[in-house]
Image (cartoon, helix red, strand yellow):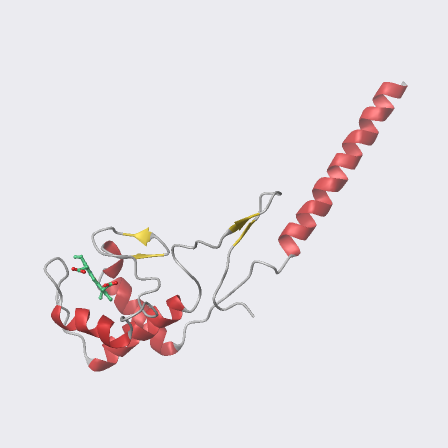
Length: 143
Ligand code: HEC
C-alpha cells in the first residue's frame, strides 16, 4: 500500500467516525422535545375540530385553510379568549358557519385551543437561527 492510499483510508475513517458521533448526538439529544399531552377534554375538542373541518378555514401554527385567521394564540390574545371563541361558535359570521354545539362541546374546543396556545407563539418572532444551522424556537411551556 503506498502512502497516498494509506492517507485516504485514514481521512475516510476519520470522516466516518465524525459522522457516527454527530448522528449519535443528534438522535439521542432530548433538547428539542417538548411533548404536550392533551387533557381528555382537549382531546374531545381536537375531535370536534377535525370532525367539523375547522382546519379547512383556520390554521394552527400556520397550517390549514386560509379563509379564516390563524387560531394558535386566539386563547391568550388581548380581548379574546374563552367567551370570544364561544361567541364565534354560537353565532358564526358571514364566512363562518354557526355551530350548534352543546356547552360541553364548546368548553372542549376552548380547552383544545387553550392547550395549543400554551405551547408557543405563531408567528414566532423570537426564533434564533444559530450559525451551525440549528433554529432555536421559543416555546411557552419550556421549563
Ligand atoms: C367555512 C370556513 C370556516 C369554518 C369551517 C370555521 N371557521 Fe372560524 N372563522 C372563519 C372566518 C372567515 C373567520 C373570521 C371572521 C371575521 O373575523 O369576520 C372565523 C373566525 C373564527 C374565530 C375568531 C378568530 C379571531 O381571532 O378573531 C374563532 C375562535 C373561530 N373562527 C373558531 C372556529 C372553530 C373552532 C371552528 C370549527 C368548529 C371554525 N371556526 C370553523 C371561517 C370558518
